[in-house]
Length: 284
Image (cartoon, rainbow, N blue to C red; front, side, top):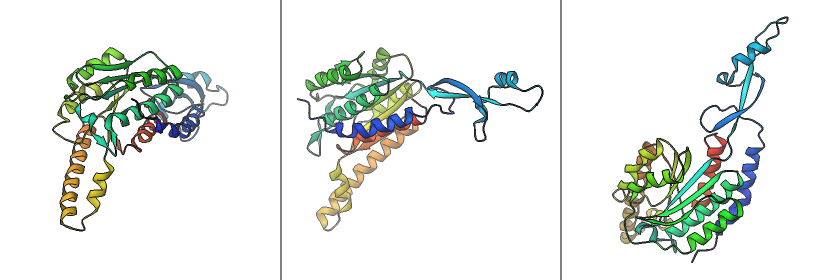
């Protein structure tokens, strides 16, 4: 049974931010993920790399002289790809703040999918451990969310280790073009994260990759209380757990991916905010 889509409440504010981005008629960004918009005259502060020298030569006034510089403006491409891989292996069964990890992954995926499809991006999702437990491809808008809900509703975590070595091929089966790939999993343990870390270089060579993981608010609370011997021992264990998350996060970033973590309530909007930030930076 799928939990209520509580993260839906964050959708209006994030859609408003997307509309603000879409309202900017052009951005001076060159490179992957952008397309030509128009030509205009150079103004102070423009990136000199955006100067179109051929257009400048054609428009230089032979009487008045002067450079008559012309720049190209660029806008983010639409119809970009977002691929969401949800880990349904044994770590996704752990309960954080009375909610299974996989439920938080579902909430995050639904909010991101609702946001991205409204932005004109194509969203595909796969639920996977050692086999594909659910797949949604080729849908958009209301159909996308309906199919995601139907697919997620029948999935329960399987108490097996996730086969991360199969994930690059799984992504290739979805798309061959540069995409935002979101991996919803757990990064609590360096040992358990070895498989994930091993495949990240393959994914980051072609894609923009975000790894998301839910964190336990109780761990942060335990780390802050040291009033008696029991609390000191609990704080030490909590500090070790937080250190492990920090170590794995650092390794993920060194391999070229990004990390988004948060409590069950905070993770879905945090992922949505990172998606918007990528849009604003022209990286998606």
